Image 1 (cartoon, helix red, strand yellow):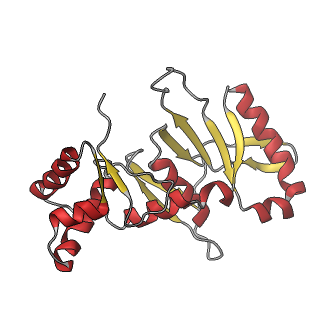
Image 2 (cartoon, rainbow, N blue to C red; image 1 turned 90 degrees about the vertical axis):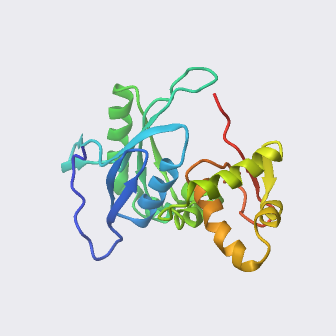
Length: 219
């Protein structure tokens, strides 16, 4: 449970984020925080994450310091090792530079607090968040509220399977659609399957007509 309730703020973007990974609604108090949660929610290495997770005493700061997010990780499938929980503050780089002196005692307290619990503490900025992957996830989330029929989904997945588990968007549409109108039917279903992880693409490359779709690896 968050230790601090995020208040409404007319100067910044605040709101709630529906996390499939957490199975709950989480709160954010900046657009950058929301974008970071979006990345976490689609990261297979992440087990869960908590917003406003702990309040840390800081000398001279009456209300202490509450970092933005605590991330918990799955065990690595190959090694069995589990990354330490990651406690992070999400800030723009220009804010960090401008207010470095103000933030220094809070971040120092957070580093000590995390170390005492065998966690990691670090800063997360727009440099790590606003990536090609984020652009792709924003695109895919536009298809989260469609509910394709099973027959259409199976037809797409069977085609990829026929192509030895890898198929391009162009080849897929050539098989499925005879005209532009039919493409408009199939494309939302294809993107929904990617969003639901029933089809896999390289999220770190720009989505274009050459994008390749793969079937998920089975255990």
